[in-house]
Length: 316
Image (tube, rainbow, N blue to C red; front, top):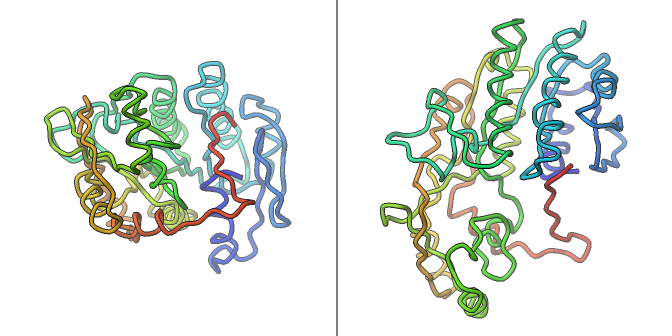
């Protein structure tokens, strides 16, 4: 089960609002072994598998995605949501379609914005098929609402953190995500920084400390549960992110003070942006509970058990 699903399932089952609901998951590569979840095997690109999965279903939560996999991007990212929406709009039981999107639809750190990024800001995908598919998903969902009047909403989330993800996102030894240090440093420099446990202080295109948006998975889960079966969510696109973007200078200062880690400044061509979550707070009553201090504390305190390896799923 993926990061979001694994965290969502226990919270969903414990929530009295959803007492009596049943769960069905359409899985291709993922494995879900839980007595509360019925499994349908198949690909989103297979319309017959999708229709079988949606038979009798009332609410659809679409979280599937592939990263930079051009051979799968159209089948999963584009054809997949098309199949889901076609099955949903023709269903006699369907009530709500909820999409988990990403801030790659607005380019996160790749494109500059001269104001906080709201739900009305222009979509600007960064290079690559993944960001393109996330833009198409948002637009297709929007058009299905216009064309057919379906009850649908989208939660647009930035980079999702859990466990020790944030520590590895800053690691020179076993990095999780990007930007890849090899784009800015030599192999020798990376090895030296890994040996000292250094912390990167990224600089943006203007030379200021880079500011990038994150969200802890527990906060995304709380947003999903608030939006699910909630009439006020109908037709909404909601940015869900930490109230304040992560400032790499603040991160470096905190880890230097708390853990005595050296700091390495790295110049980048990226842009500092602020994903504004005002609409989600106002309409859904959602609040981000994990701020930067807590994000750092959790990531550095987390100790992985032998049966809890780091798994990064892209295709699937």
